[in-house]
Length: 399
Ligand SMILES: Nc1ncnc2c1ncn2[C@@H]1O[C@H](COP(=O)(O)OP(=O)(O)OP(=O)(O)O)[C@@H](O)[C@H]1O
Ligand SMILES: [Mg+2]
Image (cartoon, rainbow, N blue to C red; front, side, top):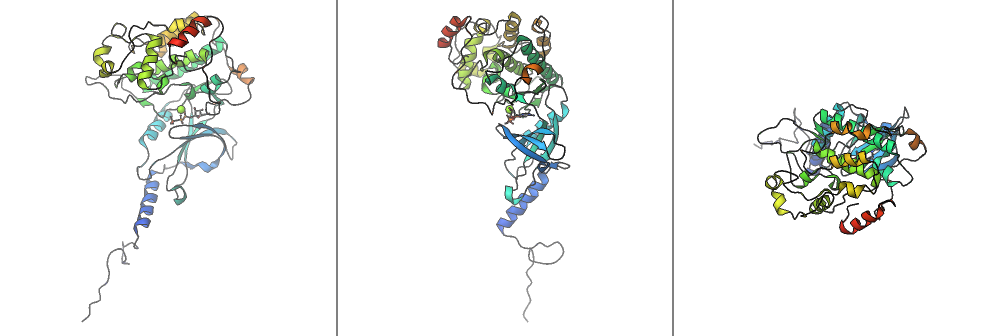
């Protein structure tokens, strides 16, 4: 008697059975399921905003000026690319969102919303996440690149005060920014400074633990990276951000980054030429602490010239003194944001003054992304030019 074999499995029609899928269909279904898993609950579609212009481009995405279609509110949309559909929600982005949600301060960028684009076969099931921020009219890099923007001493004091206030708040909340640089410092039309870009930020433990913390040292854009990170430090703290503040402060006068290395070794050379040789005399134990100290060829016999080199640009002695205290090689001796805010620089005439009037004379947005590339370093001002020119020959790419 002929037995009637009925194929079982995927082609069956019983309860729980699924229609047969080939590999391509299975991959597609898996990608859709992974995208579904990655979707943020309660997040809106980004289509409620209309993009107006691209204003930034970073490692992980693009930033747009955009308008809310119903309310007309102007925002900044940071589109964060989710690389692999199967990898789940990126941990770095989760960290950025978590920190941004915790930080609420007038000098920190405000995260308004998180939006997504639906994952469909048309975007290979990559549902992009968009962080929605209050829009700021300018970034400091864009402002510094525009020679028509001129800051008075009082306005520079205001910028530095707002920057240090924001950073003090970040550090008080046991977080490190880890990417201080002018492009990450935004200024609103009303002249309020906002620290932005928390994509490299992390929380830190102030407690000293015997084995030490082990954070990555591959953070901070090279020109703003402090010597301890370049030497391989992994147990660092808030002082890493204050080095960047020192570089930014000097740049408010020089209008170009003051230490432009090409590689980590070159960055250490450039730092030594300005801040003096890195030795155990100025930085106890530096030779024992870092293996790289012996491996790298660090310039010997260099004197510290921070004040001498900068006085061609910075006339205010208090300003020079504060920059000098921020650009200290040994992180343990570098000034912190609280002491910096108490420095005489902020408390002697001219006092910090509002930026609103100066900004109101400029009616276009200034962003680093929209600025023309700079080909030549800017020359120092006429007074004291001689010493600066002689140094230019000696100090390769120290402003
Ligand atoms: N809220 C905002 N308002 C106006 N412009 C902004 C705003 N946020 C970012 N931008 C502009 O976009 C640029 C890039 O943004 P951001 O620094 O957050 O990202 P990124 O550098 O691309 O980030 P990542 O380090 O994650 O690659 C900024 O330098 C600034 O010019
Ligand atoms: Mg940035």
